[in-house]
Length: 440
Image (cartoon, rainbow, N blue to C red):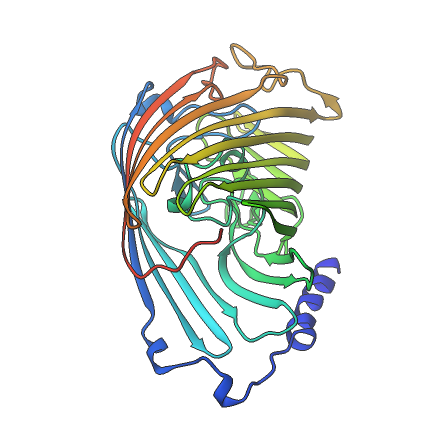
């Protein structure tokens, strides 16, 4: 009922409260030239040296938080791997972008993601362009504007991989869903935007709405279903964002909330056959501060804090016996990065990532270790950290070369042994064609 009411509210806002006003023909900006969309292609290529072999990386995880952090993960027919995953050369992606006005009332953007694992529509959405009173509606497949970095494409990031907490909670692609988005910019002296999103809820790392079948069901054609059936959309996001200037410094704070159902099916995993059925809530706060020394030189601080609560039933399939117990997770982490642009060409940056909270409650009992059956059980009080430093050179606005070093202490083997990972990467990012400007 709550979902029906929320969707009804969004629909009403779209149809009535923010209905477009048809302007006189002389005031419309539509032109014949807009029939030809802007097109661009972006290539991201890297050479990577990990201190751990690719085969061993496949079996590392962040205990209690995420499994198989490196390598390709395939659940429910979708496959993805983290960027810069393999030793040696990596073609992270070729990104094809199309964008154009449709008419005076809509624009369309499409982003196609080509990688060695296949081709996918990363984004494909329409945006209203004629709504008044500060409203905007967007629909299709899109990156949620939860937090700061989730809405940004990889080539806009200041480092080669997503922050530890973002990738652990939301996966490599982040919250990238089918759905509708409604935003309103308030008529205030400083920028103030409120947004709401109703999303399908298929994110495999955190949410998911596919049915989970008992792997031991006697009739595979009519299996026992674990957890209640979910009706999409099952993920709802809200946020408030602001921006204001203090002299030559711009400050951008934000607060975000996401709530949805979780159906995480890992019964096909060889090492840890498990599943989770329940509900999840995610809370976020972000802050970006950018001080300009001149047109090209600036110092930028960016940070996000994210906490998630997962409440439901955890399932384990041990030797053909399915066991289910009430499971609660309260986990939190953050990142903070500082980037200095010396001039039009050179940039230098440092970043610290941490997942500092990993509280697990199984069957009503608070757990002191993540997996008691491991050879060396990992304490739930352990911090998972990563340290990064980078230097990049922009030959032009279309080409960038980045040298980056990461020291990752967040990964553990199946036996519970910490595996410190040192990574050096040389990354090339090049673009051709007309590409729309990024948000500040």
